[in-house]
Length: 274
Image (cartoon, rainbow, N blue to C red):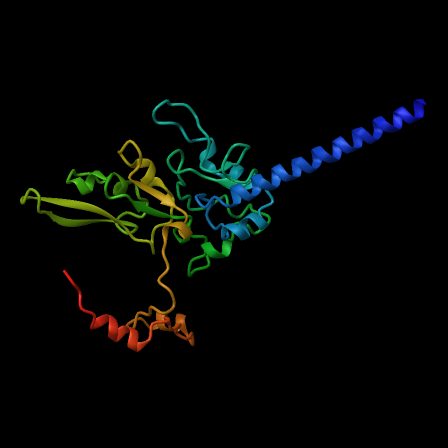
């Protein structure tokens, strides 16, 4: 009798364990699908495309440990030490647990010339080759972490108030962000100095975002896939030989409709009553 009871208890415990494991697996799967679907994540310099990055990253944390800002970054408002640029995602973050990311409004990338976070990556999730210049030297200016985008309606420069905070904070002064002169027709005697971001130079470091004087930054960094559009292969710059090479032998797609020529003639000749 005792053996029968023990067996029932064992089976019940086993079934409960299997059920809990299955539920845990479903919850984890749902979590990973959710965070992978989030497109607003900024990764370290040299990071592969997000899908490839998540596959390659082994969540070792060496890049975050190598970030030199970790021990020297002091909050300008409180005077207290805060985390460095790179954080390792924890439970509750909208980023896959254990992967490195940064939030420019809190701590931007300070564009270290040595780029210490990249060479320590053991898996290739941070690609050194993408950061090499013509001399085969590591060059932080080659980084493409994201692209700064300006919301004109909340940027006070577009109101006519002089502000060059983002321009001055940019480490690639007068190249990644330039100031464009424009006449202020509202007053007739003043001028706008408008910040313009150049995506072929901007590294996505976020120093401009942190420096913005508005309550919520009017300039902010987005991942490249989110910030940049794509014209499509059927648009070709006829004056640009490289752009023509990009298209190569691609065939133009012809859009067709079900409207016949007779239908079109009837529509154009239709009398409209007013």
